[in-house]
Image (cartoon, rainbow, N blue to C red):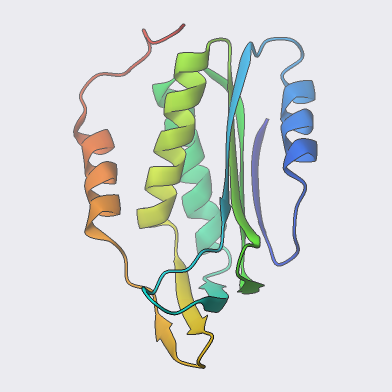
Length: 163
């Protein structure tokens, strides 16, 4: 299963993980997942909402490329990448990533790679609204870009990872 979902509505992480597990037909010994939530970005002032805009079509293609790169790099049976858009309140679920593999090492690393790459490559734009009404665009963080560069510069195919 290679599943990309970009939607406005909320999601059920357990149902997504279960669907991936069932699609792997007993071949996955491990599924690593990540669920991200809207949090306070600005210091000293609570976030009311985070509004996500995306470029339809391009966004799904980029997420597919990220997932397929993980499939090529690690021994995966499949993955799910779900990202929401629209106006989301603080503490709302925003992103879900799952990677299924025979071994936990491949699943953990693929899940982390997908999230790191998604943060820097997927065409989403975030606008935060604070409790006092101020609004601003959330800037990309250099540390996220550095993580993605490290994955891309690592010459090891990581196919020998398992465990």
